Length: 187
Image (cartoon, rainbow, N blue to C red; front, side):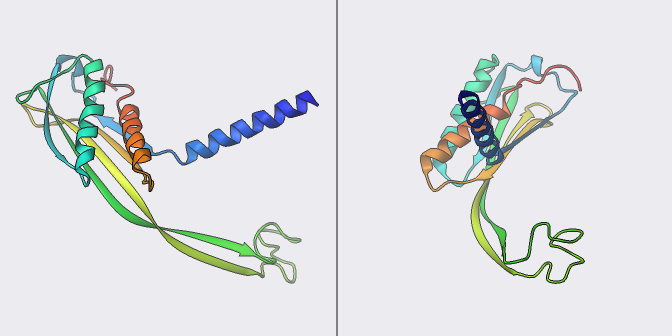
């Protein structure tokens, strides 16, 4: 009985992890593999164009904390690297289709919905579309002298109706962007 409970608990934990990670924001990073990140020690902020002005300070604080941990120092102007940030908040339509009746699923015959058998594949379907608020945040780092793009981090995710949740997600996404910063070696 105890073993059965342990197995069920483990399966529930695994399902919870999978469902949580399936809804996590997408974070992608790319960088100039020829850049010598170890030669940079200072940064300045360029433009930060965001839909919510409160997020400008949040982005600057989150990015600043990870760059300082990497040994970089923020200077008001003239840094070796210029950091810029933008966002794009928009609606995306998502469609969901529900099947009921005899349609959907493996039927009595070959293939999906019981192809090859009389009555297979019949049933009702309902499709609904929903507007979902999405946000993309892009953080770019440029070599201040050559103006060449050195590093780019992009976060894409669904916005919550709770501003505290959105603030936490923004911070977490920036932490994930800079997880392996500065990039090591050439690749």
